[in-house]
Image (cartoon, rainbow, N blue to C red; front, side, top):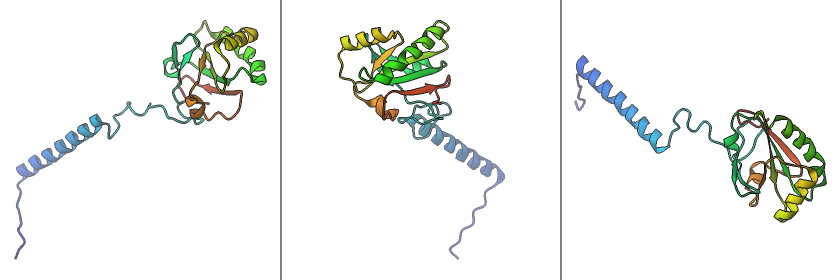
Length: 171
């Protein structure tokens, strides 16, 4: 009493199964397109907001001294040595010629990039250019004026150097 049994034939079972499978596929497509679930290959390479050794490096998108934007993601496929520095930092002044030497050695082969990130520095553009001329630096220099890259890379002291491999992973 009160229990109803339904008898579903083999043809109807196949139709119901097909409808359920297609419904789940449609739901998956809707969720993927809306960004609620990742599509293979799209979010896996998303750059993190905080640096961690062995992980993909956070994006660096800063202006160089000429006002052009330099992006780390544009250097994908090349190893990148990022050096965080300031004009007032004596150890920075001492090590920069060493990085310049490696930059000169490999810049033509396009297989190695040195990127200087100037931080914690209120020196004007003329002072910066004079500093770079004195130490003989010609590799690209960008300014982290708002401190966002400094924060992302957890820079606590100067100089700090980070090596990013061809795959964009911090070593």
